[in-house]
Image 1 (cartoon, rainbow, N blue to C red):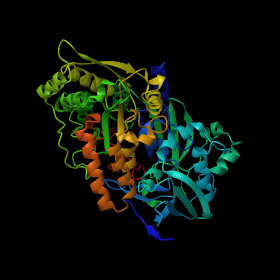
Image 2: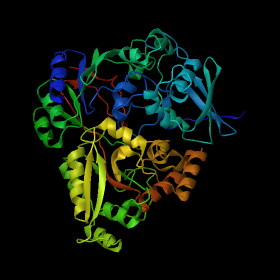
Image 3: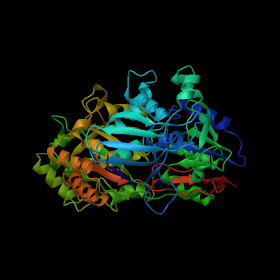
Length: 533
């Protein structure tokens, strides 16, 4: 077989109790106020969206293929993780992964090909003893390309895809490896594993209390020196309300908060706290239903909505901490292309399109939108959604909100627009990690991933887009693949397939005692470089 190596680039009381229980500031202890409403699932495949992967995923666990989180100056690329190299055969279906020798789980057992197969079974094989519906709900949709997998030898894994798929390495970066030996030792109970999980990552989870706190300590035997922790302890505290996070930082109860409220940033900076941010491959959108009867099936309405949003006004609302959307991907993306429809603020053009579609001040369009008051990467969801609501109202589109908790929102997103759980909503406000071709583009609109088979929430299916997706998957040369990705994104924009609002810059506020943090251009971060003064 020809082998080609590919390297690709009572909630308030609970908060008070958690903060009171947090240890006094000590050398080497970093306390983080997360936007999540709960401690992310600890068993391997995390919940709580991308933030769960950031704090309980790439801390405690590794994937076969990891992200390079060492630089703030360039977009992150894929690098070897528990696999040291990988390649696809001449059939473009059969992938071979050479595994890292000597990588240990926290319980002391060794990672090998059998452990990798065991982890795929826990997600994909509902007949396996270790199958876990909770982890499968988080991970199965991330690896739709996988048809089969097997042990070749102790340190060689084979994966066969259903069709040729050049995006497989990106898909595998989502799949985290937990210890089979630990599961056995815990009586084959995932509930027991949750209390004392075992990965190969740079941090060991020592304890957690749901909705209150989790404590992580360094794993001395970690294999990657760039991620070996310098801290003594990392403490995670769920604080979904922005003002509560900011107050906790100002009072010294935490040292780091995600997504500070923009209106308190001047006060934070005035008191010596550092605001750090960076380009992030992440957007804030409304994902539109394309079910029969949805008003978003009319391209004139979709374009009108995109032209009705005053993004510069929203930027002021967010204290400048956003990049106004010009498409689904950020303006500087290599995959942006040259779409002919320009996403901008033009209320007159929006009204003209609505008039053409049969609407006006005396015949307004009523739509229903699912939103969450907090959540991973949601920035300031309530003020932002209210801003969008007011903007759309000026173009004769009246929005009714259905407000649900973030984890519930994720479940509705996976269930799809046709599910009763969507309550007849015509859109869902979601933020998307857009750093790789599959996660950024394909999974949202592919016909074979219509929910609940995948995360095509809106049930969109278009033959031309399917040809684009096929070309992405079958183009293994990165330069040629970029051209296909540009063509695909142009269709995203020209057809106004989403309500495209803004791109995140991942602001976080840090105590001046926090030193050495390098904010990667990635949804995940490396906590190994950090020290406390």
